[in-house]
Amino acid sequence: MIWLLRHGEAADGSPDAERPLTEKGERQSRAAGEALKALGVNVDACLSSPKVRAADTAKLACEALGIEVQLEPKLAGGPFHADELAAGLGDDVLMVGHDPDLSMAVHGLTGAQVRMKKGGLAAIDRGELKVLLRPAELEAIAR
Image 1 (cartoon, one colour):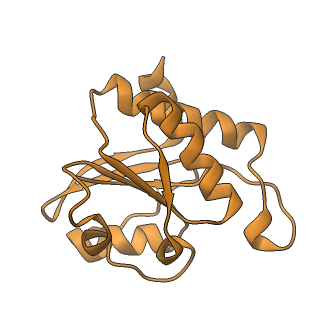
Image 2 (tube, rainbow, N blue to C red):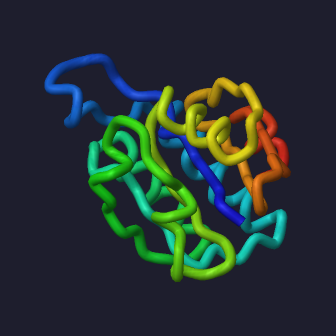
């Protein structure tokens, strides 16, 4: 299963690659990891955009999952092939990145038209959209 997590809410500013998470973004990130843990998902690998807001989202989410984050430049912006990036990394791979790239990845893998919310999570299994959760839903699951 490929899990796609959009970075949490970030501060405005420049340069874009160095924008940090807000307190809300940090909460969203932790909640995503705690929700995955509560759902019994055993994430084998986590790939993240190297941009600060995404990398920090990945680190906070992965604390609950007990896995290390690998920075992946292909997630920094623009179209990417999630299935190719996930190949050989295990059964459950978490990717943390940006929109519209993540929404386009969901569409490319499933045909579904979605708009990933900041801090939102999607899961795709063999071309089928299995999960699409907003940050508030992740927080409820994480409790």
